[in-house]
Length: 65
Image (cartoon, rainbow, N blue to C red; front, side):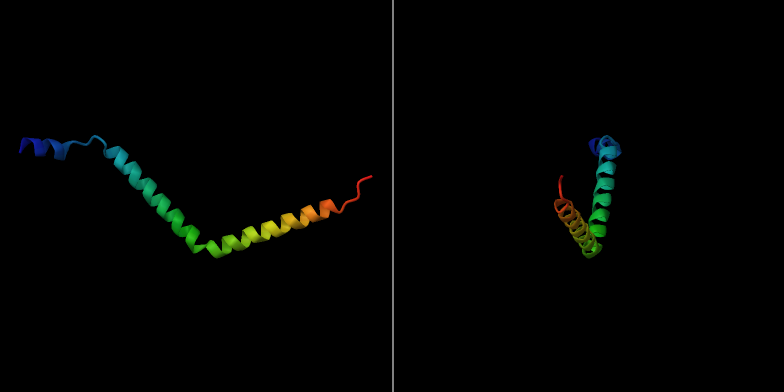
C-alpha cells in the first residue's frame, strides 16, 4: 500500500506530460485550421504560381542587347 501512495504522489515526468499535451493540442488545432481553409490556401498558392509563371514569361521575352 505504501508503494501505491509513493507512486500516486510522485510528480516526476509530469512536466514532460504537460508539454506533450500542449504540443498535441497545438498540432491538432493547426491541422483543423489547415483543413478548414484548404480550398482558400490552394487558391492562393495557385494564384502565386500563376503570377510567378507570368513574371518568368515576361522576363524571358525581354530582348538582351
